[in-house]
Image (cartoon, rainbow, N blue to C red):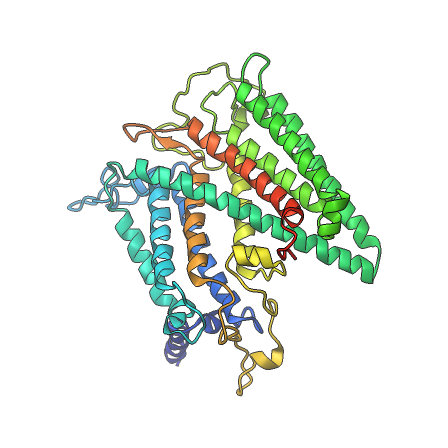
Amino acid sequence: MGACMALCSLASCASCLCGSAPCLLSGCCPSTYNSTLTRLAFSFFMLLGTLVSIIMIMPGMEAQLEKIPGFCENGASIPGFHGKVNCSVIVGYKSVYRMCFAMACFFFLFSMIMIRVRSSKDPRAAIQNGFWFFKFLILVGITVGAFFIPDGTFNTVWYYFGVVGSFIFIVIQLILLVDFAHTWNQRWVENAENGSRCWYAALLSFTVLHYACAFAAMVLFYVFYTQPDDCTEHKVFISLNFIFCIIVSVVSILPKIQEAQPSSGLLQSSLISLYTMYLTWSAMTNNPNRKCNPSLLQLVNNNPTTSTAPTPTIAPGQVQWWDAQGIVGLVIFLFCTLYASIRSSNNSQVNKLMQTEERQGLAADVETAEDEDGVRRAVDNEEDGVTYSYSFFHFCLILASLYIMMTLTNWYQPDSDYQAMQSTMPAVWVKISSSWLALALYLWTLVAPLILPDRDFS
């Protein structure tokens, strides 16, 4: 009897796995739109690949795998059977490169398939919103194949793909953060006007907190990442970004800007200033000059490094993925990925840039979400038109895969014999230039209504 019930349960799960996103997730997220659940499901694939990459890059993972009898080539063996798996490839930075390569290929495939899908009536929309079990099998198959790619030039070439893709994704992160800050400010101001004035106090508190953290970060950067007779680049980076943050903050509260954009204010500027300081910190941690780039352990133990040679940063077979700035980068990535999946912006320019449309919101009406049999399912809100560009969404996930790859490996580049990882100045300039571009984009969102008064920037 129990076996029969188990088979029925498996059959029900199988039908859901081969069906649509509403069947998979509506039990956990009832009364939700189909478009939201599909993006959450693809984001879950991304987070699953990220988790696998984190596990495989953990220190000592190769030693643990070698303890499995008959698994690794040089590990414990079983009489009459020898392991054939090269465990040095499936762990460390090589495994991260291959796992993220597989995810990028997976999302690239769907990005190509979903070009110019206009509504859920398109047959390709069923592929986007369903067949999750087969999608998972495709991702697993691509991942397995990626681990058979020989080293050769793959690691070096894919490193440069990661640098370019990560640069673009950092800019997308900024757009999402600016949109989040605008939405945050607008809703809290509306709450304050319609109800308690405590919302104004809350806005002021978060604005002061953001600026305090940004200023404290700047002071710490001068203390720990500069030297009186060295680290000129760091001094320039910190000073310039601090000045730029002051400029955008002042511009955001100018009377002309407030008249053109009443929703602009110091909350957005404070959040962008804090994000800029993070990018500055992230750039300085990639400086190959160890005198200007002390590790977190050295800062805690107050043990400064006097070496200035760009020696390999990481010992063979290991990557210090748990560096502090890497953890912060992962947290920001998770937030932006989740926000991109559930966002419903009321800013027409952001929607146009992110290839999305303003819709009803995140949740659907209960009556609309219920079938005739009383079972709640997600609502198809894309019969008349898609709420987001399927192809562009997958393109963003491609960039996110590259960003995760670079974050987990701390933007370190494989050396010529692929035995160690070393930080490089190009990674520093990519990150610091992305911070300048981020500030320029935010400044443009402030002054654009004045420069182009005939365009709608609401």
